[in-house]
Image (cartoon, helix red, strand yellow):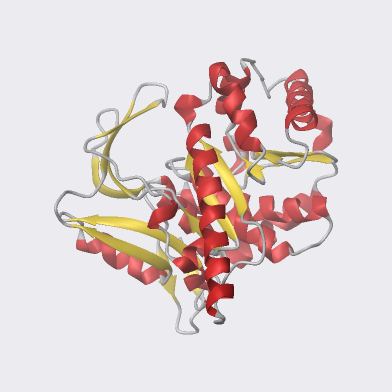
Length: 360
């Protein structure tokens, strides 16, 4: 089986603390790997769900209800037993104003190319969430191991899933290392990936600029800095700047566009916890690219972004992951909605908008 999507993001169990009087939540499913897999899975119902690959390190304290939830998704999740230690856990706290503090409460276990099975290595797309240095190492490592598989296939004269094409990388930079001193490494990493996707705060921090999208001049500046970065440093890369409640902005060498969030100002009351929305966006973005196929370059990435926007809307409607329910017809409902229905509603909303460019 050739997989459509594999993430090297981690799985984490969170404890989340809020401002009083709201009570804390414990044993919450989390981590970039979980949410990225969710994004891809939303658009891959069974049996295609098994084309979504990810890795979970299962410690001796792994909750049975979390295992049951993951199993119900029917993905190619590889559980790696680490019973000598607890599952990777993190502490989160919401401060006044909505700022979220985060720290690991035990040692994390990173995922690299040596953790991936041959099927995962040969995935059509890979999601990386890491520093620029590690992005460079992972991209080169996955490419090297794919070539080794292809060479072994030729030498053995056997039929296998050995890759015939360059891997497609979607990179999500780490927030703490999005700063001007990392710009050189960031630019080097851009040459090895196909899509780079910081959020707006991370992008501004990296460039050392302030971009206020509540002002028309802010949109002009965003367009300008994206165009200059692509033209001068990485003409083949696609920049996908995630904008939270304002949606996303996509920049290519020959095209730029933006899409609004699914839960816009009119639906803002549906947003419970934005955690994982960006990771979920990128998992669905990858699947959307594959569904678009080799259509026009601009149209292909717009379809991918539409998938990402819709998937993110499910991720942020609750603490943790959306609830999956299967009907007798085998149709799936996530938080009571069909993914296809929500996708169609969003496309209809886009068709009714004359032009988003007016806000630039």
